[in-house]
Image 1: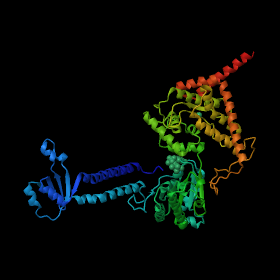
Image 2 (image 1 turned 60 degrees about the vertical axis):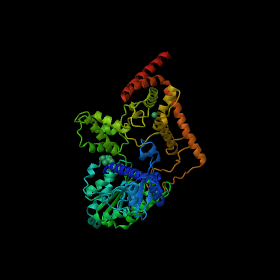
Image 3 (image 1 turned 45 degrees about the horizontal axis):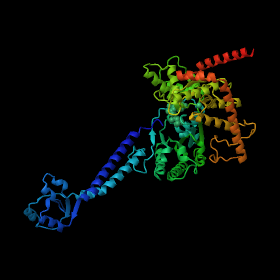
Image 4 (image 1 turned 120 degrees about the horizontal axis):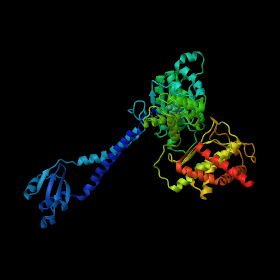
Length: 630
Ligand code: ADP
Ligand code: ZN
């Protein structure tokens, strides 16, 4: 959530205080424990004897104890040795002895009175542990954050953060695309604006609305826009913050929240990451924090059931994993309205880019629809990020207009993280990466059913990607044919095969490719009915559907023998694809090497450059062949 205030600095400060306090306590304890060991505790009678035999150097007389130093025998014979170093110190408990002062004066012992400080030590030894406990305790509570009252309240009152915003500026116009979702929420707005009128007209009053969608698809934004459109306060909290709390605190917190919300009604209560709180019972390991989660969840259910929907409180919750939610949450009278936020399609992406580019000065050449076409799969948050990044790049270059080139670079950055130009990669690794990437790119260009390559790069980006081959889908895809899936599989294997052919060895770099290839092959067999051997039947329950009754219990609906057959078929598909790519790239080995060395030199190849070279070589090849045939 973008509205969350920066809290890390205060947390760090707190821990520094704790560390300092702990250090202090250790030092004090050290003193208390270690000091007395070098000090002898003498009976008073022995002390008197020492005084009488003249073995005492000086004395400090307190109210209850006498501290003193013994004369060192050796210091008498060798005067250069400082007395204080070898002298032994002692203490003794005072007894009623009115003659002591006279006696000391008589034997010429230096003495002075001293306010007794042993009580300080006593007190400290009690207070220090208490103090350190207090520090830890307060640090812990601070860490869990401030609440409605700004962090001043006691334990039950405010642990996880609840934010209240009264004047929400976000409107539906700020939320691009998502037209269906907006339409579904229109009713909620109507209700919040004029609850009485809504009821009079016989509308069924909504209570809980669940927004389901991938992270960054605009769930929070949409919920806020509903509050903004209706002109009501917006309470928000995040489910994940409840999970770390003490047992009982979360439940108290929920109670509080509803109390506050009822006072401010009509209003919206928004619970982000509902899945953290409302995971179906039985998912995940059991443990203390889960008890807390369950208590909090139960309290939420109690509150939702308890309040009269006519009061005008609407609870909206967001989740990116609706399938793991406790079915109890989805029952009638709870979160029974479900709004699904899909990843935006190309038009939606363009609209989102437009919304965010409103406050940015774009050069005339900038075509947002081209950028939208280049970013399939991107969610609103990514697109907002691209516009921001492009504007920053333009500013850094001292321009006051954002150019298309800035957007290109921004897209690259958002895709693969920031460029790390100074990252050191040894030449052999670099060669492997170059051949691997060209393996993908060349396979893609030589096969008929794949998207053209947009760019191949071996500039390391982010932490994971050492290089990448980017393909440009010409349109958004909702359906894929079998030939397309097979070709995609081959492209995925192209990197690994290039390594085999050129280096006779393979690297770990293909891990992600192999994972994806395996997934694709498995889906072809078990979901899409594309295996001739196993036929049309599907082998797994559709798991992606929302709101199933027992979604976590994916029962296997086939026998062990079938499972073995599936595995065999998946392996066969992969093996076949591997063999085909191997043949393809072996015949094109010179081209592969040529392109790889060009990539090594330039580090980035645009799709057009790549295609020019490929077409030139392939054309030359075919004329040569014809020549030799004759
Ligand atoms: P979620 O809650 O689904 O994870 P957010 O609502 O927090 O996503 O979205 C993050 C940011 O992404 C928003 O603040 C907004 O800038 C941008 N964004 C996401 N979806 C859209 C959209 N449909 N229109 C405009 N901006 C969007
Ligand atoms: Zn690869």
